[in-house]
Length: 196
Image (cartoon, rainbow, N blue to C red; front, top):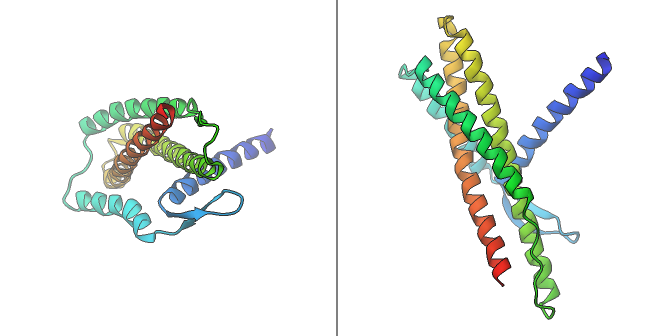
């Protein structure tokens, strides 16, 4: 019984690590593909720092100027993140309904078709990675928002909870816009292929 609990905990932690790692890869620059059609990436440290560092800087500034989270703002964020989490789960289901549209043209260049499939597969993987990461952030944010409501009478915890919730919220906003951009790009590519 205890061994099974430990295995489940390891799987959960492994899933969280994998989700974060896959999202970080989406921040890197795509250089090309290798001989087995796997993408080759070049690290983009500036993008990584800006995505994870700017929310930390903004949340620290908000706390430094005394903008602690009030219970009303907490309630509003709780409602918003409940909606966004559901929306992202629906996006995830929608993405799984897409399948690669094969070209109707039998004389199509085989190498071009391979390249199109590689682009499709890479964009699909990036979109799924960003969606999973967005869901992960929104779930963590929901947990912190609920705990903050319970712990609200303990005033010395306000700065700690405020900075964590601000950080997760700002990071979620950045990731959410990346998700919208990727889903739009991916669906446009999918529609163009279907029209052809």
